[in-house]
Length: 373
Image 1: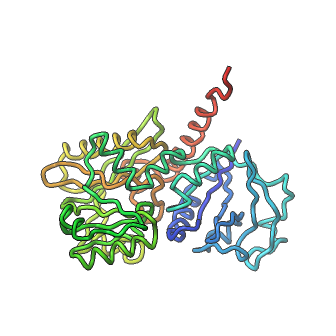
Image 2: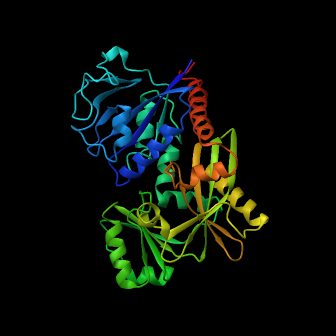
Image 3: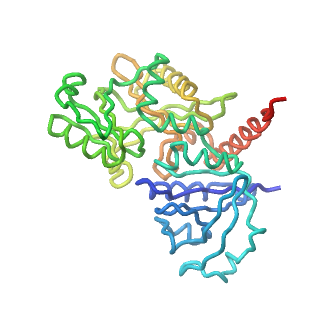
């Protein structure tokens, strides 16, 4: 019997469009002979909407009042409030009939592909747990820790895993720019603590650029990191599995002609960056060191399901973890699925593995005793 997958996409973060691109790729890759698919979009204002297939495939942004039909969330299930007609999706459309509440499909597993805050920071994972639904990716704690770059660094550092030196600043504090420069040296990278896709990230080569970079990062978060710039190769690898059985892919490299791998070079001007899979001129020892470091970091952070681990490989062979991405992109240019495809895993099989892992973890955790005796 086919299971029903809900793809959850959109969201209120600046990564809304990236999420839509990822969701379309996932939708196309899911084995429709094995799964029925329901698409749930979260609008920029935060409303959950049931999207018909034809509307979803054409959308780059979800707007309340213009797309889909509202959903009501109840602990233990998803239910329909009403089907509100829109210009794109008339209520009498034969492709999207006006189901009674009782006929809304029962969801067996969720693939949340909402990037950034309120998508991969633990808030959505906690909600899905309350709804009693299996979901792809880490649990609430793993998602929260993996999203916050400051907490990530502290845990990895305490576990003996190398991370770049950093200074953490809060919005209400007045930065001592000169002290930061003396402590870290130029160049520095300034990042919002809780943001992905390099949104709000800047490189600072001098004092004025540092001031500007901190001001930009504070637009996106109340906490920012100022990191020492490391001279090394930007290498990425992919981890797949629950705690009981983990697999690590080979390694890929981001090669920049100039500048750094920011949002524009990822999604707007992708020709500015070259993705090389497998990474070239990396020794077997270095590859194993990177893969082992990624696996250790995954375990230390309490992650499950999937993560892309971004590291720096220095000339002396040391591996520094840059950051994990616990809900990596699934766009046409995204490294995570490309790494697994290079390893011989077909895109539909990767999606199937992730959905299976989500269900297995849900069953494992559901078997825990919930009463005192």
